[in-house]
Image (cartoon, rainbow, N blue to C red; front, side, top):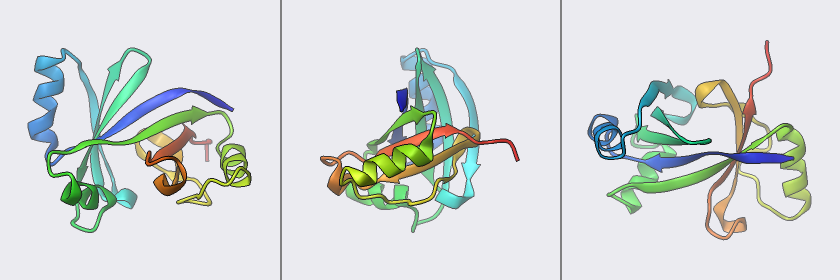
Length: 137
């Protein structure tokens, strides 16, 4: 059901400060920025081959990314996202196998994708995201 690694989520204090590193030092191109109000973040995406990097800047002090940055002021890898062709089936399978779900129901995330997370306490410390293209309305 998992088809590939979709992206790595990287928490940053500031997109404006972080983007030049990815563009100038690594030679990647920012594919665009987006605000995801439901998660209280601004994002910027970069393609690195078949995998994307998603920079995440908090827009509120009570966002999950702000809490991560309180513990990790320099930022860093926040999560790994796996693409799936059946997010509900993937969540059900993970739950059946004993993984703790952060989200029982997928929701719309960045880049028009449906997303849901598994709790890192049940995934050996790695916040794990499942994602798939959102279905047309």
